[in-house]
Image (cartoon, rainbow, N blue to C red; front, side):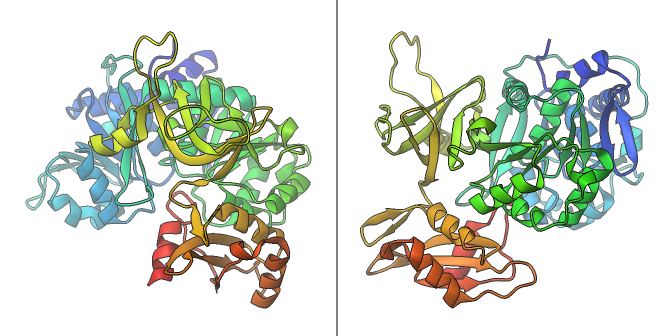
Length: 522
């Protein structure tokens, strides 16, 4: 019975011990081998004094040890905190301090970068280094350093610390719309139900080969592991560098499932996809923002036999909706309907449900609703709130108020309108930036596009459009503006167009709208 996260792995190891579970570069571990490594990591963590509920941070690039450390933390009864490998030391220090991390798993090179931050952190007692052996505390450090190989030495006995599905399993830090990253607290139940729900509608089986492109600190990236382990599929890890690497790995491993965010898909459609790279793909999925129509059309040309899954989710509820591939031609702009084991409501500010065609806030209820934000009751109370009392309810139910504006049609399909805090108010109108961006993408003159509202004393907001040209081409701003005039009403036309070679992205690969806004304001 799957109660805790690591049960996904150990369960598949019992059913198919010799099946390929995880590949990194030229090394592949079977489910039995990965299970044994994971349980040894758990024994090692317990040997370091790691107790139930202690936080273990994993600051590594994607590799086999990263996965073993994460699932080993679960088996030891502790809470894993995956830290995005592209974060700077100051950001990492904030995360370690915010959730009082006791054990840090990283590399010697990353430890050197983090030493100044660790000086002010009293919670970190142990540092485990992958790729080097070391032991003992140094004169200038309060923490003890040891090596990964020593951690996973064969030990007897069970590492199981007990626990139930309601216990905290993970803290995932999100960049947030304002301020420093906040930690979303997830239970074992959240992660297991999410894995089973997503693997169900994707139709995952033990025959799938899933390419892990997104960061494991990103909920959609971590989902590539959990959905695979839930059914005994094979995961191929890659630390994304160049778009052509994705093409090469799809061909090499016969990848059947690929999930990316829109900026990455925009890059991938420009690559030379060979029959060897496309022939095995069974599905491709989008998350982290709306897929430009032109990009979706091109992907369907590249992968004619693959089913497209357009998904919407938020870390606070893991995943919320998906569009059935059979509906893509009829309603490609829809984010679909609720995933299995979830209910999605569209509500007014007072919590009453909106009528079809009426804009409202997306609210998620069900087993995937997270436990809140770590050490932040104020923001937790803002996002995790009860619905108005329902008939027959015995107690108030906490749900996630997403902050996203959506609309539901007569058939129950949902359409994303915009983020509450990203909406542009100009000349008395409320404008969704995604509507402007979609038109810009549709011209074929831009590679990336981000629309923002900047403060303006007369208009409320003036619309700024930041774009990058297609690869190897120059951008004709006059031609772009002329095309926008053909498609948009005058109040939606950008007052300012900025051309950048590359648009900044967050650690999870999404466009960093806050940074772009700050740069334009400055």
